[in-house]
Length: 122
Length: 107
Image (cartoon, rainbow over all chains, first blue to last red):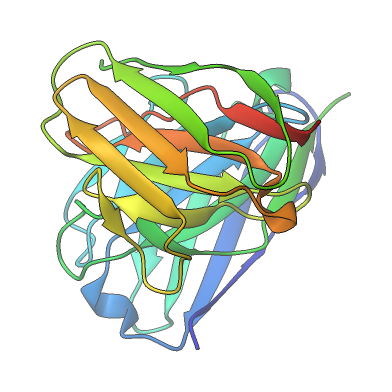
């Protein structure tokens, strides 16, 4: 049974940093690309970032490029999102999600965590 | 970047109705499109990928079609558990943009 558990959310002041984690189990973590997707309160889904199975390739949404860094530790089955220079518009539930196919990302994300809420407010 | 639009943004339907949601891409994305269902307070659930391939475990009343720039998600006979918001997502290249969503409510 695939399980993704996010943590690290909370209330943070504008301009500060926060690191999210996503611990994976139930599948070979090191074979799958992983994504972060966020959803502001009452809004739609916004894709944030992706990292390849081996960590060598990373892509970001324009809205977070230069401020957020996605990374992974395959020895710990853990995905991370380091967020810096946080803004009010970064307030959202952040989900981690797993690629449906190993090694390539063409079939969508078939497993999602429950999400962790990040609130950026002074 | 590729942009996605969905129509309608909201629809009201009855149990048993046939429902169709359209997703349009700003440029051709071949068949690299997925559909998700999201219920309030829950994570999205993958329904369809590659425009028309049903994800394992998803009821056969859901179907997808299209390629290039126009895609549709059809629910052949709406069930009570189908009332939710539906999002399309393009997978043709990063960023993997989502459509704005279509909320399906009970008439």
